[in-house]
Image (cartoon, rainbow, N blue to C red; front, side, top):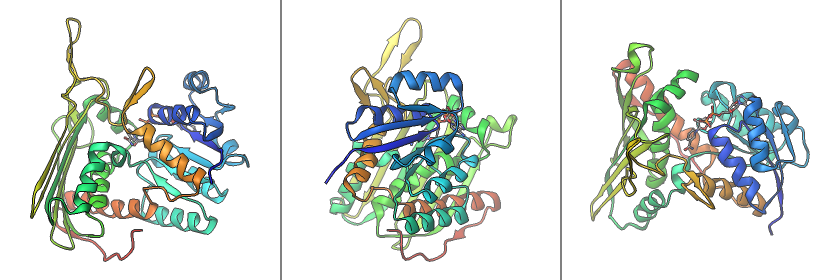
Length: 348
Ligand SMILES: NC(=O)c1ccc[n+]([C@@H]2O[C@H](COP(=O)([O-])OP(=O)(O)OC[C@H]3O[C@@H](n4cnc5c(N)ncnc54)[C@H](O)[C@@H]3O)[C@@H](O)[C@H]2O)c1
């Protein structure tokens, strides 16, 4: 049986703003509260959503009994864990943007807190809600291409987003962008588990002014021998604000899947700006009365899971496994060595 729920959104920037607007528009959310520390952004989001409360203090949201769930989208990522911990301790269901926590110890603590309080802890792995990606997952699980042999996801975003990310954290391309591809492929390949990771980084642009690489490749071997290659970079020229492009190839024993996620299906060519690729940002963007992208569907899915008492698609244990792989990738890139992963039996 469904009911209206109360939702708090902490951090209403680019991503939190999309999620707050999605909550404001669904009838399943009866009460919406927002915490945003930037006063200009707080005023904007208040006007956009008509939220019952907009504050600069996230603790107020965590302490509000009528809020069932908290969406945490504040940055920097490194400062977010105290909010996750407090929300879980207060018995709130939590959707947090990736990465789930700064490290494995904090992730395990968060999972234990969610279990102890009987609440859901889910992570913003938005790709799973893109129909193209959902199709790849479904086709693999239906056995349409036989037994998977090798999988590739190559994802690149613009240097504009790269500069934003590098400005707020020292996290690698594996932890920031690669995490989406690794989550996606581990999901598609379930119940197979990753056993071995090798990774290399390269840097010619950002590395001139910081220790941030431009790109990272991750190669993963699964326990049945399937291989994964996931590349993630952030130095594309500015084709469109927040532009992203990906290629997916999955080769199996009985077939192959190829997905063009480069957004070349729409071009806007103007005298003022030349060719642009609209609707190409990773989370998506509003177009008048519709939303072009996966993040609104993902947010509604989470709200529905809580309102209907169903399990959300992305679990914290899956996110923990993704973290194992991205951390192993960073270690491999640093040492130049292959990293063997500990044996894990449970990612449900
Ligand atoms: N799933 C996806 O497709 C996707 C895409 C892009 C980014 N992300 C992730 O989403 C998260 C947010 O990224 P973004 O680009 O929206 O960042 P952003 O910087 O645009 O927004 C963060 C907001 O949090 C606010 N904030 C900071 N500290 C706060 C606090 N203590 N309380 C309340 N508000 C606070 C800031 O003022 C800012 O408005 C990141 O973790 C990022 O990795 C996910």
